[in-house]
Image 1 (cartoon, helix red, strand yellow):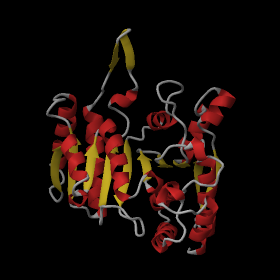
Image 2 (cartoon, rainbow, N blue to C red):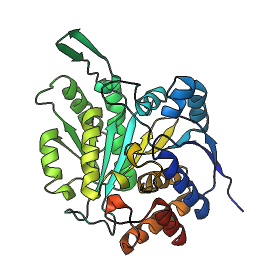
Image 3 (cartoon, helix red, strand yellow):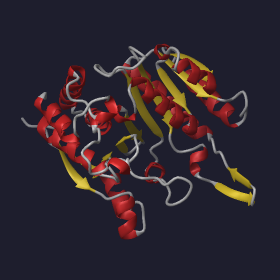
Image 4 (tube, helix red, strand yellow):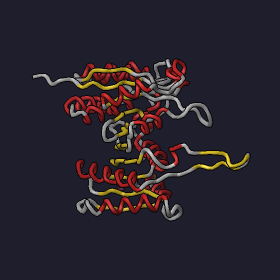
Length: 335
């Protein structure tokens, strides 16, 4: 008997977003994924039409379906509109960002056998965007760390480690300097660790962690970080396995989950057929596992790994010359 389909919300995004979204949808359709789409605009296109990065109706649709797949949206630097990603995460209380960092066959990097998981607290820290000018020469930003937010992020890290059979959760912090804010985050981690005696709990200062990651990343298993450090370290870890073009991401809350490519919208190559859809595709694989379509998720992931391992059709960011369409057709052919 054919299992029923799951309705998800699709956000194509800005820049290369529509191109890689089309590629991913083609692969999902060819794989037999049992999903249907409600499409919502978000990003520059939505701002131009409505003056908002995402409309309340669009947010309600994500909330109603409970699962969304999202392409990259543009966030201006130093001015302009607020990050759409941050807006969605806060509105839907997507309190953790989950970023797997695993070596992929066929992607050559200086690091072998990397297999770690980053759990980033996703709502608090400096990402509240609470900033002001005290004077013409003094800018101030407020950093917010709550006990409740820290506890639930830590519990998510330990629960995920237990579910996936991982052995160690490491809290990454700067509590030697920021003794109150990072001290609270670290203490919440230690409190939660008491409930998970089967999992080793360790901690490390963030600057040492970065040095260790580019020296011997294989020593790490699950990393738990506050928001800002998590953002920085997760991109560092993407570099260990080949770059943001292959880095999947998920934003998870109690009621909703948004799976997204973690790279930018790359407007400079938009419309040229050069974009790499792998990050969004592997995010879709994570989404399929989230909605328990494990068979399709495995089929797509195995096909991606086979294409990359063969090495004949890689996009330019991975050192090849394949177009977005070439790569997409190769993944479909290997399903």
